[in-house]
Image (tube, rainbow, N blue to C red; front, side):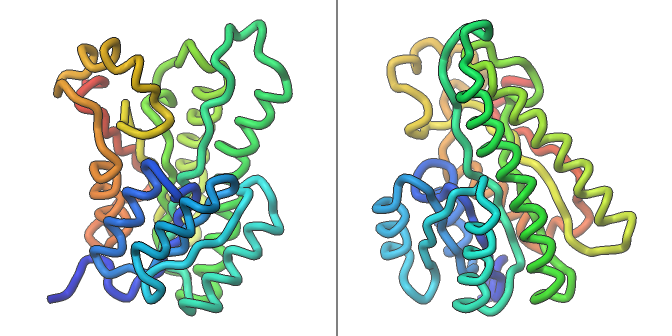
Length: 249
């Protein structure tokens, strides 16, 4: 039986746990080889790679805001799997929960570096690798957020960083399409997802706001990313895919 991502190779940043882990599991189930990256949760990334199997997955430690780390990840991908078809820019942080006037510049810069600059560097590195190893074909998926569409009052840097990713996706998609390069770039905008980034003690507050009556799961995001990574979505680029249980309906 042919699987939806057979013979495809993917890099998934920030995939040691949470949404990234869910994406990696869905990709491997559908036949892809995956590079799992994380900066801090090294043991989680190594354990996930072991769970998925050495033939299917490799863990590489990475700071997405560092150019040389991107060069390392791309080289490891090519060394182990020969090419790059798919890049999922998933790594992200929330930043401090503080009033905007109390937001330290250091925290602001850190969130922008990881959530926005990291995606910019990933897009650059991914395009170059797809050009060099995959005949200028591929799919780039940027994990943004519902918070890119409306303000998020609790973490001052988070919405701007995710909103920047939303428009970076549009710009990258158009830049490629206008030059006839068959690398698609789309964004995914999750709502409240059951991951370690969402404190359990606020579930009672947020679940009544979700029309479907529950938080999403990492697998929910993974299934959408399978579609965007596959050839089924070959006409989709520069698009925003909101997956939030109906909050923005």
